Length: 165
Image 1 (cartoon, helix red, strand yellow):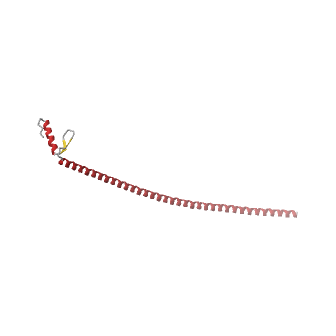
Image 2 (spheres, one colour):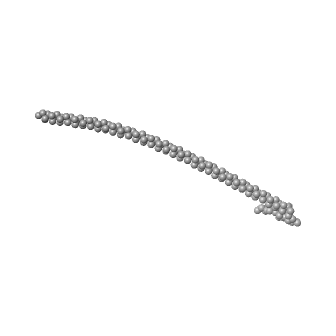
Image 3 (cartoon, rainbow, N blue to C red):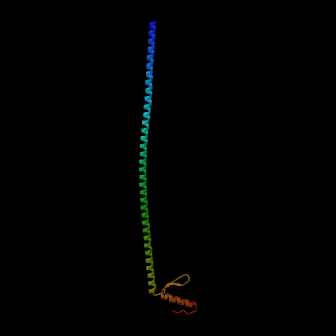
């Protein structure tokens, strides 16, 4: 019986030892689980920080791209304004040159007409025959003295006077 007691004692010790080991293992596993949860929380926090840093970097890059785009757009608008101003200036120069050319042609034509009129007047004055320009009502518009005297005599004849040369 002593043996049984001894076996019982050994079994109780073994069970106790097994329970102790199991408790230790359970505690160790619980500690490992807590550490795993803490490690995962740290990793999650690290991930949040990396994502926040990347988001900041993307925002800065977008902001810089926006500034470059705005700068390029401003430069293109300035070039367009300069081109528009240059075209307007060239158009104004062309209009001015055209007006000057037209004024020159007008002055040339007026001078030519004045020269023709002067030539015609000299021809009227120096002509040995009567020359007259009449309008539609047969009134003398231009003519020399001989034509005026002939027309006056013709008119007087029409009023019953005698024609004399």
